Length: 278
Image (cartoon, rainbow, N blue to C red; front, side, top):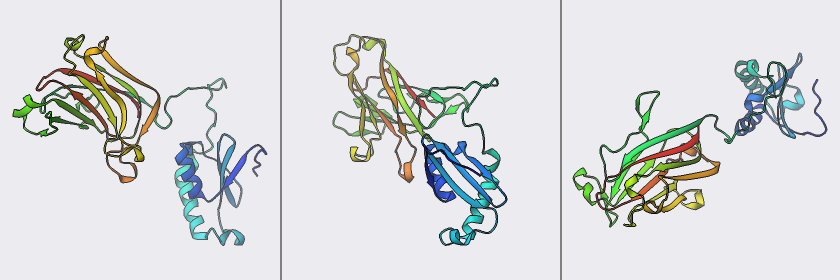
């Protein structure tokens, strides 16, 4: 028998609905259950909310079968027993071996591990300018695209024309969901204190979509790199932004675009860092 506190709001539904709700909230791993000879009562808590469902071990009661068929019940029971039962009923509040509660602050909402991506590149360079290496696989991540443009906006596709490039564009599109918190870029020392006013850096989030669809976010407006008094530009979001990969099947939903404007054909080395959670 289970009895919920009067302080809780209990949301009762079928197993598939409850499972989807808990998955969306990231608390499916906190699943609890009690059983008797005839039923499983499955539940989980989210603060003052309790999500609950009942699955029959055998025949579904006649009054329930009107809306929850025997076949559906049996399918749900098989899934629960095969996939979730063994790992349910874990300790809800993590504790140390001597029983003290463990408290852990986290910046991320969905992701778990902090990751610093470092990407070095040269402006006005189509072929050999990018170093974007995965230390685990000892291979290129393969998620950077570089494009060059002339002053009139014409794209440069031939390395022989790199001398005409006045804009270098890096598209970073990792093949995973992430939560971005910020980043920074190392600036070539030769630019510090310069007076050409020709070097600008900016960054746009999800540029393939308009603002109405949460795209084209100007994360960094144009920064005059010669006017920067330090050796790097830092962008600290202070909070995370969730960037899902190919959300609902749509492409480019986590793409970040970094734009460097520069004198024609001028090759300078930069190193870009992205602070995010994966």
